[in-house]
Length: 400
Ligand SMILES: Cc1cc2nc3c(=O)[nH]c(=O)nc-3n(C[C@H](O)[C@H](O)[C@H](O)COP(=O)(O)OP(=O)(O)OC[C@H]3O[C@@H](n4cnc5c(N)ncnc54)[C@H](O)[C@@H]3O)c2cc1C
Image: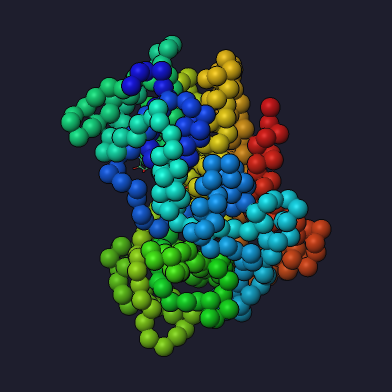
């Protein structure tokens, strides 16, 4: 493999999307992944309309639609009083070819992307290869990579860090990762118990001042449905949080039923709100969680990272084949970082504050606001354009 290639660190959904987009442009690349295979822990499960539009040309959308669950309506609930607002995404039918959310686990998306890559050549994907450090000069980058056979140097023209929240590429750049970490962690439980029989939608946000939760359904290992429930977790040990009685108490707390819930996963995540101070430092670039991290309420983090990958691959194509100016990469930084701050961070922080609101008057005012939005078509459409991430794309494209 020659050095006239792009190096990508990290084969999560964003790294694979970057890889497929470069392969489709016929730009050679090497993708390094620290792990042996695609991680299957329960993280992103929601794909929003703009993402489905972006993946249409590669055929990813068609395959994802075959495997996932469509969400035409989602619910906002009060834990004690039930449904507050029922949002019909069909209102967006003139704004997108996909007026719905698609529930599909992120590891399934990564598998689809990896399969689509098989139609191309001129690239390599190296699992069990951890990028340790990167140096850059006027012509390119040198990555020192820990491989099963020992450390090895790889040469390329650019390095794109898609290596997640703890990105080694970001640490090799002269950038800060400012923001904050929430004091509580998020506990994710999954069960095959069918909440649909109690009137829940496929996606539900359930507000409560003491113990809010988000409940949604994904295809699950056999494709027949697995419900995930996300709770805030206080200052207790993982062992206590995962303990059977405690897990049952939490779920019974918002949906009482006879007998225990069968539990399939128990996972605990730290939650942060951070954005890199620049997505570019010379020949090093960032995309996805390496560039921005946020709480998962609203299902936006992965989608946002995938949008980064489309934006950046497009500009790389112009540089690679059309002698485009490297300034295009500064435009990538301006477009995507601005929207991460203005939109991704603001919206996800707001989502968390609303769902956990402790002040009864503020909570009531928020519920009244949601009911008023649903009742007024002139307000509902722009509201859904924002939460379905359509507004963010338009804003990003408007930055020059
Ligand atoms: C509970 C939960 C629910 C979520 N739900 C949603 C949702 O519904 N919708 C949504 O859009 N987002 C959601 N998110 C966020 C989403 O999971 C992330 O935004 C997404 O995983 C980011 O993808 P990525 O490819 O940027 O990074 P990652 O998925 O973290 O992948 C990074 C990859 O890089 C590899 N790597 C790391 N360091 C190195 C190195 N030095 N060298 C080589 N490889 C390396 C890792 O092994 C990993 O495979 C959720 C997150 C959580 C925790």
